[in-house]
Image (cartoon, rainbow over the protein chains, first blue to last red):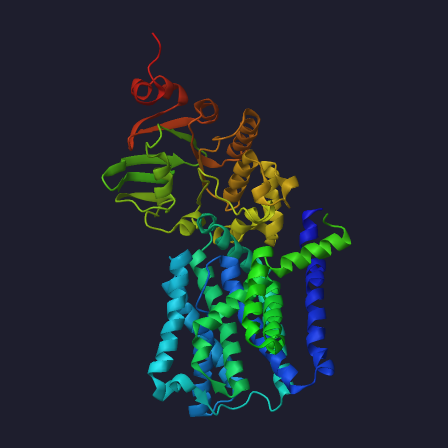
Length: 319
Length: 245
C-alpha cells in the first residue's frame, strides 16, 4: 500500500458509504415500524446515540474519562425548559441555545480539569453533575425539585414527527463528529489521549484542543438534552443524575470507544435490549447487567471491534 | 556569529538537591554540541528547563533574542526548539505516519509548510529522510527500539526546529542501528541543523560533535572540542576516570 491510499476523496467516499446506508435505514424505518410505541423507543435510541457519541469525542479520544455528561444534558434540558416556560421560546430557539449553554458549561468544566488526569478528572466531572442535580432538588421553586418542570411545548405533534426530527439531528451529529474524528482535530485529540507530554512536545496546544473537545461534546449533549425535554414535555432531575452519565459510558464502552461508530451500536443495542427484556419482569435487570458485563469481558474493545474483525475475515483481509 | 540560544545562570533545585547551578551556555546556528556527564549530573534537567517542561528557580533562556524561560513546552516548540526524550515517548497506538503528522499540525509547521503541501506528504518526506518511509502504516508499538528512536527524531524534526535537542539518542541501540542514527544526524547537520546531543556513549558522540559541554553535579566544569575535553584533567578526574600509569 502507498501513503496516497490512506487519503483523498475516494477514502472519504468509502468512509461515508456506511453512514449513507445507515442514514437510509433510519429514514425508512417508520415504513416498517409505525407504531407510536416503537417510534418513541427509537426516539430514545437517537437521544442516547447523540449522548454516547458526544461523550466518545471527549473521552474515547482524549482518554480522560468523564463522569459528568449528565451535567450538559441536565443543564441544557432545564435551560431550554425555563426559556420555553418563562419566555415562550420554541424548540427552534431552545435547542441551539440549550446547546450553547452546555458548550459554555463545557468551557467551565474543561478549564477546571485542565491539569487533572485519571480518577481526579473523573471525580471533578462527576461533582459538576452532582452539583447541578442537588441544585435542581434544593431550588425547587425554580427547577421544580423532584417533580421537575412540566408543560413544556412539544417538539413535534406526533411520534413520527419526533422520530424524524431526532433522527435527522442524530445523523447530523454523527456525520459532524465522524468527519471531525477523521480530521486533523481528531488526530490531535488521539495524540493527546495517547501521550499528552509528547503531543505538547510536538508543538500542540493541548489545552486548547481539550477545551474545544469539551465544548463540542457539551454542545451536542446539550442539544440532545433540550430535545428530550421538549419531546417528553417535561424535564426532571434524572436528566442530571449520575446514573445517566453511567449509562452513556456503558453504551460507549459496549459499542467501542474512540470510534464514534461504536457508541452508535452500544446506544441502539442497550436501549432496545432494555425495553425488549421487559417481559422477563424482575429478571430483566439481572440479565441486562450480566450481558453488559459479558460483552465488556469478552470484547474489551467493544462490539465494533468484533464486527470489524468478523467482516475482515469474511473478505479475507484477516485470518 | 550571534548566538541563537543563550542560557544564562540557570539554576534548579529539587528539594535539597541542587540539580543545576548557574549554568551558562551559548549555541550558534549550525552548531553540533555534545553534552556529557555522569548519571544524575543534570544534563536532562538542562533539556527539561530550556524546553519548558520544568520551570527554573532562577536564570534565563533566550531563544533567537526572545526570552522563553517561562513559556510552555508547545510555545517553545513553536518558537523553534524541539526535543526527543530519553525514554522514547511516542504515540504507540498510532501509525508511524500519524506520529509524524501530529507535529505537522503545530503552529510553526503549518506556517512553514511550503506551497500548501498536505501534512501527510510533509510527514512522508521526514520519514524518507530518516529511513522509515516504508514503515509508514505500521503501528509505532510494533517497531523495534532502534526504529522507535529514529521515529522520535522524525517527530521532533517535523516541527521544523531551529535547534534540535536529542536526549541519549544512542541509548539501547546496537552497533548497526547506532551507525544508521549517526548517518542520519550527520545528514541533518550537513543541511545546517543546529543540534545539542546528550549521550553516555562517548565513542559515538565524539565522532559526531564539534564541541562538548561537561556537566558534573549540576555545574558546567568544561567546554571545548572533543580533543580538549578528552585531555582536560578536571573532566578526566570527574567523569572519564584516571588514565592508567
